[in-house]
Picture 1 (cartoon, one colour):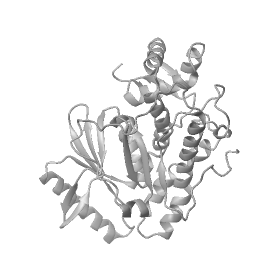
Picture 2: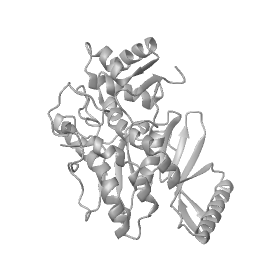
Picture 3: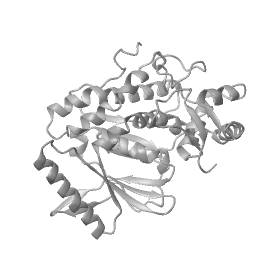
Picture 4: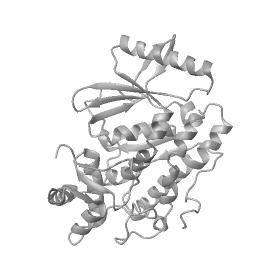
Amino acid sequence: MPSGAACPGAFDTARVNHHNLCPTETSDAAWRAYRSRLVATLHDITRHYPVMTAANSHHDGGDMCAARAFQSKCHALAAPAATAPLRVAGYGFNGRGVMASLPHLLGTPSDTPPSSSTEAYTARPLTPSESTRLDAYYYQSPRNNQRLVAVVEPCRLALALDLEFDPSVATYVERPRTLLVRGREVELCFWISRKCGTESFIVFRRQAAPTVPALRAEQQFCAELMEASQRAGLDLAIRKVQSILAARVANATRLELLPYVQAARRSRGISVFIDAVMTHMRRHPVSSFHAIETSLRPTFDWRDIRSATCLLVHRGDLAINFNERLRTSSSVTLGADQ
């Protein structure tokens, strides 16, 4: 399929979108179907979501900017490999074959992975109204012991993936609690527990209308929100569309890495692949995906090595520049703690 062609499995604009970012099976066909769902997700974010925003008043126009942030990766995912048989030849990250194949040594995922026992909060389930009126995104979170994370709207998905790929984060929970501001409950987006022992919260605020009264009202409300968090003894950060849009390349990079990390968590031989990658990196502290996979190809399948490399990036043992477009030539270095 040409890169400019329509993405496979695109959602109908008249339907409610429930984007499942979880590879639930391990067969080649299942992986191709999963990849098609991911392609459709990016396509839906960049094409259909602004249409739904214009047609439905409950959507925030500011989210259109965040939706367009993923557009540069949509066509890169629409590659011929989406419908081709699983094969060793070919690389992803090159703008035409991203996430074309799944590592072939996969374990059987559990039906319902347990939540981390360290979580102080439980995610509030989405209401029927949220499920029917808003775009819902689901994925199994490696950071949360494969717990199914459910978020609504692209901006919150971007925030969740930012936490997912932050090595300092031990666990996070979406929709953990509310704060009382001006006599009404304001729901916080995420609770974050870091490995250093600190806890904090994130709240997402929509884009205010570009008028002086609206901007002043939003500024005043945010000030009262911060005061309420201080009275409750909470460490709260406010995130807005502008900051998410500024990280548009990093958002797309995390979304591309996620399936590899999920696959690595299911791989039976992942410890062997991790040892091989780390041995290579200790000999060559500055390398690339291509160099790692080429040096280990005589012994290992490149798909398993790539998944192990992405898992090490997820853990913080290796580092990449998230603000650069992901390619096989992307630089991979040892993490700060190595």
